Length: 316
Ligand code: AN0
Ligand code: CP
Image 1 (cartoon, rainbow, N blue to C red):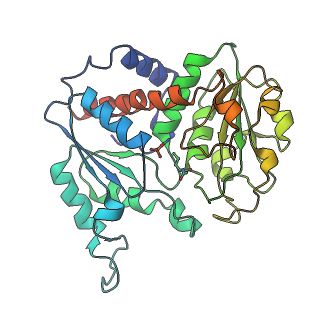
Image 2 (image 1 turned 180 degrees about the horizontal axis):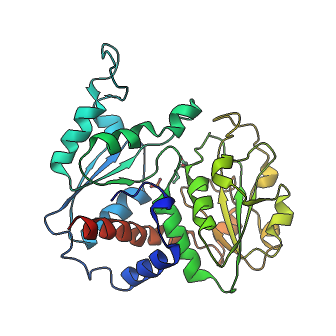
């Protein structure tokens, strides 16, 4: 069993309930991972994913090895039949097979390059490991998805919802650097699996996410209108998907402010972090009582722990 996408979750309600059970007693399965090793490979920076996934593995009694592959590993070749007389030193075929000798589970972070849409959509790194590794693979944010984040988001909303059918708004916000669509993609896919929530995406015209992911999810281009009566505001920047990887809008009017939060039903504020203060969201909002970003980060541990536990139970 691999955990690559939100689509690997059969019943979201069931997974959220299980994660909340783990949160109540995180050390209950301390023996499950005994003598099993998680190898985490990072092709990009991380704070939360690295520490929460490591903590989850330790809670399960696993051993953990972490490698910053992007800066410390050999440059990998992914193309079949490549004549390797250029920059890459090692082929994914050997690299993935070799890491599998040391690992019972391999977790990988490899962001979108945001240059070549087809390459990013092909998930070169994750697909290469899926093809050539011999142990389960976990996605810690790939080119197109960040499912462990969205599972943590679902857990956090379940804990903080006060309405029977809350309204959840995913809002684009400006950012000085081009960011991937992975977080909003997985958030959308997770929201599509919610049975008792209304969902609206708001972003400037032209910033549509991949339509194969958004499908018939509602889009409202007027941010103020989208915020009306919302119970959760989930802010995130992403770069343009059509004009791939470009920043075609940096309008500060899209920043989440206290005035905008006043339009909501006393909504909770969410962001996956790291966040640029006073660009994505004002200090006033992120420092307010309605901000649940730290609890969201805390829930990354239980999201990761459920994923690792499910895999360990399946390979036993
Ligand atoms: C990354 C992104 O937007 O995908 C990671 C978020 C979890 N964010 C940045 O690079 C700032
Ligand atoms: N939210 C998240 O994945 O944070 P890091 O990039 O710090 O891991």
